Image (cartoon, rainbow, N blue to C red; front, side):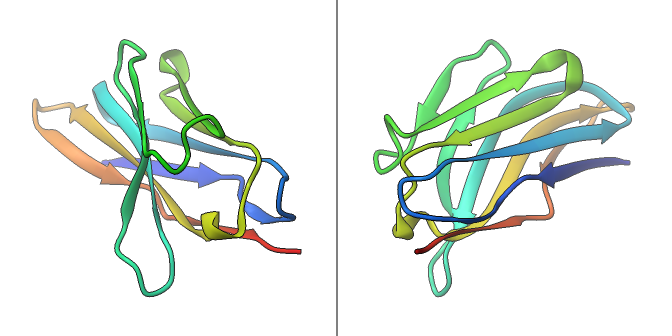
Length: 120
């Protein structure tokens, strides 16, 4: 069994910063791409950022220059540093990872979600 456990998030004023973390644990043989997605009320889940196992990153246009995704492969952990936060960044944030589990099967795993609220 594999799980992704998120931490971080909360309430922050516009212009502030937050850092999200997501750690994978369990019967892991390898992790390919990791990423962050978000879902605002009444909207579909959308891509925020992804990072490959070699460190290549990809960002949604509306977070470029403000958010930074990184990962620590030794800790099976992905991070999202969010700066210059705007009210429109308010959403539930989910981490995602493509994980090769013991037994040779690839799983597309999701974290439990964490609320980020940007408000004055």
